[in-house]
Length: 56
Image 1 (cartoon, one colour):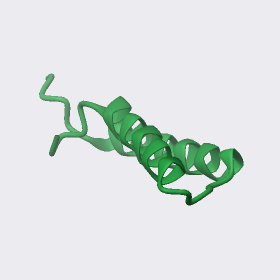
Image 2 (cartoon, rainbow, N blue to C red):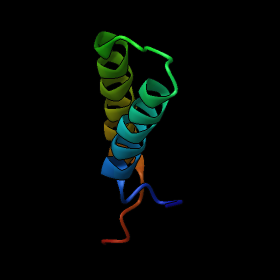
Image 3 (cartoon, rainbow, N blue to C red):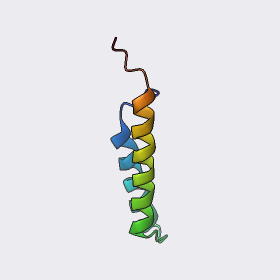
């Protein structure tokens, strides 16, 4: 994952963390999770633009 080839994995981990926290009684608003997912996705898109993909 050092080359950030699986950005969907990070979003999935966020979803799993929300489910775990909900089952523990800790409520996180869906808007907060949505904002985090959008922010992480935006950062990954910007990083992927500048990462060398090994093609010449």
